[in-house]
Amino acid sequence: MNQGVIAMGLTCPIIREGDNLAAIVVESVLDAIRKPNNEFDICDRAVVGITESVVARSQGNYVTVDDIAADVKAKCGENATIYILNPIYSRNRFAIILRGIARAAKKIVLVMPEEDEVGNVLRNHPFTKMNYDEYYKEICEQEKAAVEVRPDFCGAAANEWVILGNLHDYEEKKRAMGGNNVFTLADILSDRCQYGLLGSNKTDEERIKLFPKTAEALELVHKVHDELKAVTGKDIIVGIYGDGCFKDPKGGIWEFADPITMPAYTHPEIMEGTPNELKVKALADDKFGKLNGAELTAAIEKEIAAKNSNLMGSMQSQGTTPRLYRDLLASLMDLVSGSGDRCTPIILIRNYFH
Image (tube, one colour):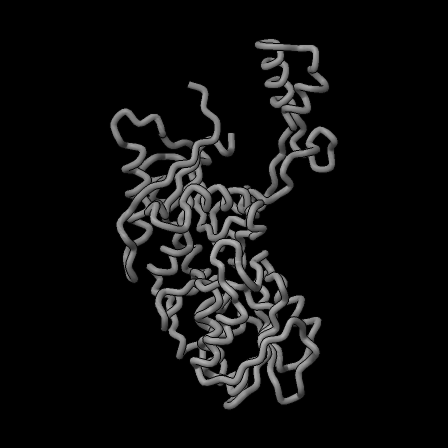
């Protein structure tokens, strides 16, 4: 049977802190390919994805609201006035971070434009119906901090502090603002995670899960690769994925609240490359427009086999997707696993790389 790309979500036990995640991932993959009458075997350059959530959970990479407050106090001092610029509008992603910052401050000034960095609207959100200015103001008041909401930033006094809520251009924004009174979310609890609070998710009302620790994540993907190769004899690409960086056409929301799509992966020489593909429908309509059926198929297959090893800038590749493989694969993995109750935190992909 001729097969193109196949992506398969794999179940596994619920992951807890201290679990041997590498062994669990390997066993889940092997179980999937060993099932009777299963045509989904494994091949060289198959791809195994592990969602960042279970990686961070196995690492025990959690902090509390009090941890956030303590670090903010250490940076800004007691009774500080703190401007928070461009926070993401999310109950899961930012509300608990705000609670920690407000717990440390005397006054919070929220600078909230009509739309956040990833497309969430400030008021009457199309999916949640939330008014985030009111919700965030309520959180600050619960933490006994005075609060003010503004649509734009007019500057802070010398004795006031700024925390940038930006998700992706935070380093550039911090450099542009200058001064020693400006922090990013990546600066808060940076001793616990390379990305600080970026990429974190709410666990409960007083606890937050951080993004995976990079060094341990790299160790995990290489261990899974080595153990799978020892059993299968195949050279399998392994990556840890977060948000897939795709945009919802109805709500206008860009699904990319993590600092990076993949915090760790094997085979960087592949994953940091881009597709080198011809546009088949353009070949069918233009160069081989007079052919049909088997003759057309044979001509296109021959064209693909003979294509240049580097089509960058070539008109032959116009219309193909100019993104890194790691970002394309993260999008595919994220869509397959979802973010709810599918219980498939491991993704197995074959035939992505021919």
